[in-house]
Length: 620
Image (cartoon, rainbow, N blue to C red; front, top):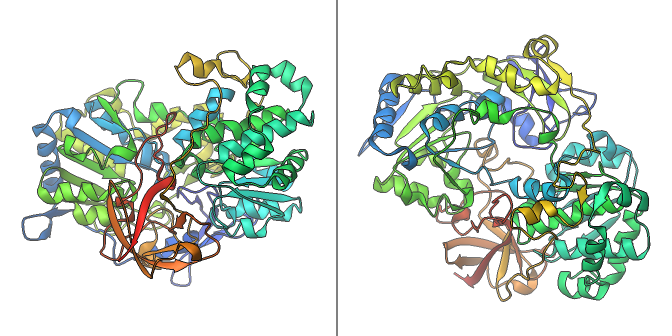
């Protein structure tokens, strides 16, 4: 019975046994760790998507008046001609984590890096937190999944009950105390022992206030601090300014709640730092400060952000960065605002029109003919609807690949368990055919067999591709928590690593603006970014507002980027000054909600601050 892992951009990376029966394919979640015998609504929906009426089954070419089916030769020849017509720096590829397979996402980048086209910086999700934490630790990986069942847990900027269901289940099954920190009353906040509501953009203030309390109580691990850290005295002096009074005034956390949270940290909990933190004002600063709580506690494996860097997978090799690099890099948050700089845009594994800040401008540029937009996709979405060339792709159940998790340490060989429809072709096939048309097929980057590239890329895990194919699932080793590749070789409270790069050596706080609403995007249980709307329908064009902020059931949100029209509903779960939109969708006029999303990059990994999007609101 084949075993497959869900390749969605999701913490859980569920593992299934796949079998045919009852007139179709059935996916059964494995009963043991880490999937624990259950999955989410998205995992259950993937089988339904195989026969979705929105599947793309043949190459499509958009003319002046209609969209017509064409051959692969015609579609790729058209694309190659458009690419040859412009300078490589005006060709942009946009790809992200719609499918986390090593062959699906990473390998196709080789062709574009070889051509020296422009690239995004892959910053839309987790980059800010990764780079910020590395300034102090030299790495960003942390706690293994098993720890969530053994120790108390703090879920910080993460609605785990909705978007990290197995981590949530382990924490609850372990019967250890739980806490949560967030800017709205999420499902997680309502079901933990200690919920802490913080004002948007002020998490760093709370974290530094906590550090001050732990030091004041002399609850830090002196032996660890002396042996493994650098710059403690500077850090200690710095956090003196983050008094309980200051935390209450600035972050909105009452001092008695701060003291309770400090007492909670004396239990040495695991802190799960949500990716959402990096998409906020002062987000990188908050990630830095939260991680340093565990340096104080002498607990180098006590925080979890992402374990992608722990397994030893050579993603740079898969991407071909050892041999060739992009001519330029564009922050993902600014792609929409800078789309006029490009003549050709090639997309796979992403839906940028709906998911990137000002993504609507990509569709508008395509409609004007300013850019030639091509997308390789399994289903029609907003980007495909705007594209000149649409190429059919298989879903993850329809192709062999290697799947990894950024949470658990299981590497999985995904065997195809269904046949792709029509003329769908996988990503590696497409870039090799395109390389032939562009005269790049004989370069070593493109001549190397994709599976040989995967075998070399996973060498650092200690597993060969042959072994993985034979076993199906391999558990990887636990990383070394006492290795710190920083400038000093220690955990740096005062980051010399940051100073060497012209960055501030201590987490900084910059007060957010006042007199505006903060639009934020809590997760929905039905959607992974823009995926699964073909199964569950479009998210409602609704924002939730505090009753005291309610101005009517139809509102316009606007800022310098544009405006959107939405229905408004009152909710006591949303604090004053905050607006909550669940999922990623469109407004009442069909415009992507991200038309007003904040694209400004963070200072460390470049992640746009879209979860603290500042808007004004008026009644329709």
